[in-house]
Image (cartoon, rainbow, N blue to C red; front, side, top):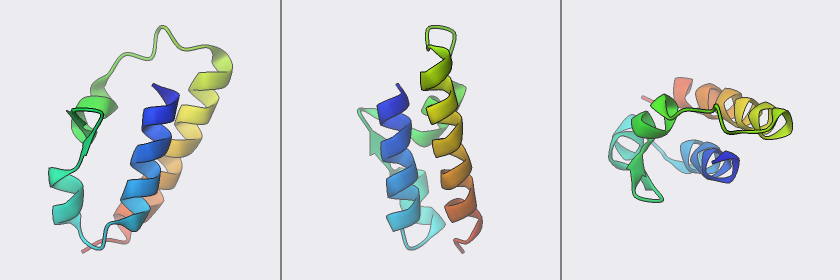
Length: 65
């Protein structure tokens, strides 16, 4: 799961606008589905990496029009 979230962060920074983010699919799930996914099975290290990736994604997303 942490690897998929890292992919989301990369995609979020590569997209040129929010439309790209709305239609994006990572491993068959939308970004919203990944946001709502349970992190209960993740180790502390995976959770830390996932949270760092979400922060990176959010920074890039906030710059989109």
